[in-house]
Figure 1: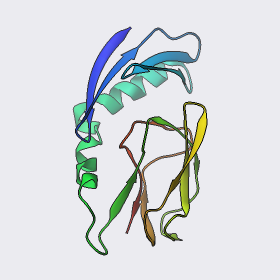
Figure 2: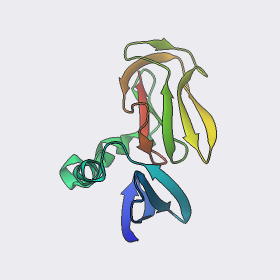
Figure 3: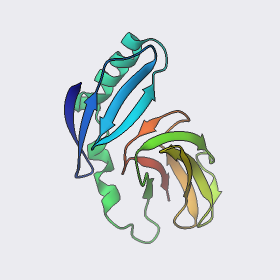
Length: 144
């Protein structure tokens, strides 16, 4: 297994990636094993992974302000509480939402977790798509 260290929103992740078996790729994140299903062929998926891991394309620095509490009326990012796969995006950009309204569904450890809006507001940006694998702390939507 090839090992990597990632720091996302100030949190350290130790990631080990094994050899692909068809479209399944064994991945270990901080001691937890996952089986990741690749879309397309392995070379396309690896090229996309390398591009996403490149320092110039890494989204982590833009996500750093999410740790600060939002001031009244300011944009707030709704982040993933744990690593998983987005299986549903329930809102659209520009849509008004109420506190507690479902904005997405995250599958983690074979369980579906509803991600809800923390406050009333309008969806200003959607950062994920159905099928995306995301890590803990990754932004899902922005709420203004």
